[in-house]
Image (tube, rainbow, N blue to C red):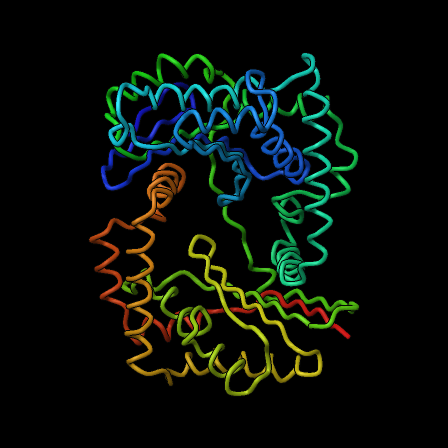
Length: 425
């Protein structure tokens, strides 16, 4: 069930009885802006750990325990070209509890308290303890990023991939220099901008009556989100034409024990008639599985990497490769990685590799469908970019349709667009 509660405020309700919990998730979306990413992440942290009614983390935790172990979560993440500031509560299905627990009403009230009644010292500032504590914790987390060389190498690759999009040059989780200069009053000002102007998506999954929950939302929630200024969602995809013509490269020398390699490829659109799952199958054969060519040939057989794998992102057609290795083996590893791609381009892979890839895709789909978050994300994609969603019967048809020629075509339509090397000692 989907309905519009107010301008650019969408409610999705998925009634399911297979879970013992119910989840309510409220997402605030706007286009990614590098000047806002740090603010949004700190905002999520400050708001989720205290509110006006529950002015400390302990107070919120105590309330969660009173609600039979409810769990509040807040986060920021990228979703296509949007920065998603989200809040959720997951709680026990009242049908498994005794008495009239008012689980839906009480948990929705807790979520509303956290989002719409923050812990303020004044109209212009958050509670000083809440602000300084979360700012300090976030700064510590951002400083720790420099110690995670796998993450650093992928962040550097992202800068190369998004060379023509300045808003994606900054990680979605923020920047420590911007955080240091961010003031309490600036964060409160941004809070009002986000809550009043962002596109709002509410997703509910679990054993709920759609009509009753819709009425509950209209009675308790609609007045809080009504705004004439809520922005529309306009999906935009990056154009990698310039990078296809001239790939971006960067090499850094660092005092680390292990060197790192990160590569990015972009694929052309699928040919008409090809299976929509061919790129995912190709990626599994290439490097997305412990039976893949990269794992078996680069790591196991030739010992040219401590770790190596590939990931495919269907929405932007990006395939990335990440490897940890000795610097002296960098050139050999790159050559062998490219050889594995040629292996697929030339159709040298076996039928059993195709069947294994199909089996993995089928299993992953089954495992994902047994989680409540799968249905939350599915509803989000259906709202934001429905083209990315395959119904179950369509998915199985596309999976069965994956052919050798499909996989070969996908591999031959890959273009390298970026390469990052971190050379250790």
